[in-house]
Image (spheres, rainbow, N blue to C red):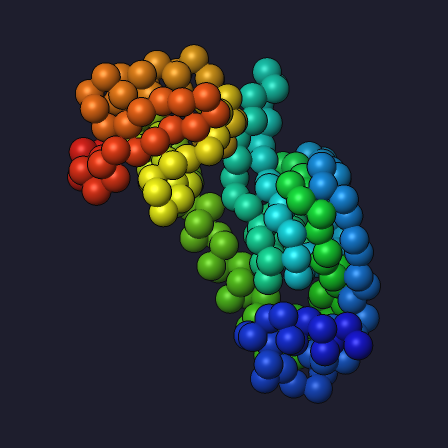
Length: 218
């Protein structure tokens, strides 16, 4: 039944070959409550992860304890670091935390290797999902390396705003998402508010001119 569940949740697997279906059937289902630490820095990677519901954040931590969000895994998602560690026989370089209750299917390392060797369709799915999520991780590296903190804050706000232009996040949460200090975020937001681009409220930021803000940050 595992293969039927996964092929119904992942459209990319609808044309899976018989070998791939047989291998997917060996995946086991796990349910984890919110705030569970799924893997830690230095842990051995023993399973290929396929998320069917919930949200997981993957973060890197500095020696001082500062956190940088690398990416999120949402429903129908896979984990680029997990795939990388399985391919390279490496340990996890970051930490994965369930932000909500999570349901996932785990494919053991040995079965993952069989999938690469025996099922062209499943191998294509693994590498396609890896490439897609790796591109997102590279985008983050580029943003951290080449964009100013102000540009990254504006980009984050534009991405997280609802249809009314409201971002329901505290300054601390924004700082955690961007891997910077709360004081830096507060100072930049105050400047943008004084310039008339946004309004600040308790636990929220209201974008007054999202389109103008987008052009301003370029």
